Image (cartoon, rainbow over all chains, first blue to last red; front, side, top):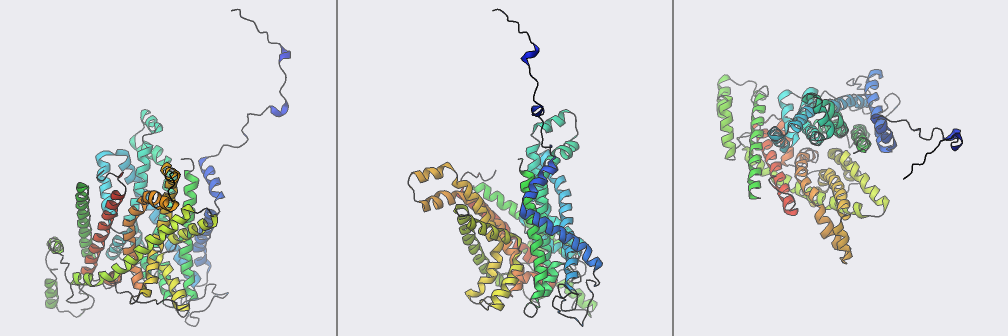
Length: 307
Length: 307
């Protein structure tokens, strides 16, 4: 077999056309995870509408009580049960209190309760679920049995009991709702951690000598952030629902705190005479819960598309 | 199977025991005592006699043992607010009212939910599906008690179609039962839809069709039967929802059931009644969860009970 010598001469080559020079260039900028998810989220109209509504609600809750000339419990007996007007956009209630201010103040309370419980649940859920899923074995079994026992009882019973013991304040309402709702988060974190800890990158981190805490928090939990965030957004409406439910029946927050449930209850008594008053708190509760659900669904699709 | 049921029953008993313990010490930890409110001018002797009568003069741990022992013999003590009435009598008296309403709501949820779910999963018309999905989303977002107020106003007061108070004829059941079943219907619709869609794509459905089986039989016998599982497992939590939902719905519609009794007992600080009802609610939900798990295992032999 003879080897044929190939001589490379200049005329065998030809200069590339200017337009083809960058044919391998990637025109689309590489996206970060957050940007990628945000782009997907933005396409979901319902979720965006929910986000816009929530933003407005949060802004309203912050700004309206600050700039409004009326306090949330400022009574004006001369102007009772007024219909909506320029001075009182939502009208006034049976004590002449401005309903707009009261609804927005209620938004502060309801949203604070919703977000605070979600935050606390995140903290407890990651620790409990993380340990349970990461350690596994007998520890996991015992921890899960404890969860089963707490979960088997309707959460409302715990909430009512805690409110009775610690008084009907906002703080005890937050604690009470947390006592039962962290379980969902812990379960979610546990399932995620259990599947993620078998992956190669977890092994790699272990081989590199990372400590258990570091592997759990920096590698496992961070990779499970998508489902955790979705679970978190779903907790907020549940907390708002529980609070308004209890305050509505009259066993929730104190009478003086104008939470949404309390407002709905007050307006319900006038439903036959002044039905317009009930619209505001009902709309506030329903639209907020609806928006949070849309945002949660949207986040779920946006964050988990890769899986 | 037998082993599993025994095991679950034991865990159920443990749960009840934990619940009873938490409730007992929770109630004991509430500041003040039940006699302080209405008997301001009580002499020390009379006070001591009252304490002795209810066994409150003994140390808390001893009271706890006595209470548990009595509770095991179905003796939950005497109501504090209603003098001379046994807690167990109140439960026996009021529970059937709630149970009737609950069963009506349960049947409505299952029938309507599954029907809507089937239609939504099988329809080729996009708008039908859109309507049902929108309804299901609204159903989970709108709290039942708010729906109840709106329905009460429009159907009961404005159009005078349905009675809005008490439970004396079948027409009285419509509004409260609908309000109770709103969120279960939506949940069941969603579950049926997703699960049936999965099943209808399976090979055995194609096989059944190619054998010439009638379409209805394919849907019901081959499709629905295999798609039932998530619905059956949902029935346990759904029952908890109906029980807790009855707390507000009964108050709203002035139905003399056990839920209304529960809210009243809390506002009256009737501690023995609260305790008895909490344990009763807990027991019902635990038993219902167990039943739904067992039914799930009977329907689907692939579930191995006990693991």
